Length: 80
Image (cartoon, rainbow, N blue to C red):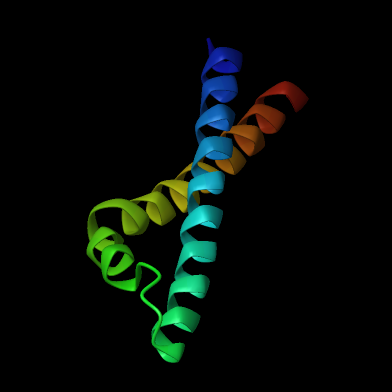
């Protein structure tokens, strides 16, 4: 059960990290475009910040901490 949960958690985190990287790259390109005066989607990215990218960052950090915690507890239980 634990192994299956860890596997699905890791899959979720991999998908989430790609979403976060995509969001960061989009943000960087959009900021440069906004600065130059070319519309490259900064307004759309900004509208998606709260409902999409902000929770994705929270899920990424929560999942990483949860994965670390599960591994530490498993190590303590196996060593006893």
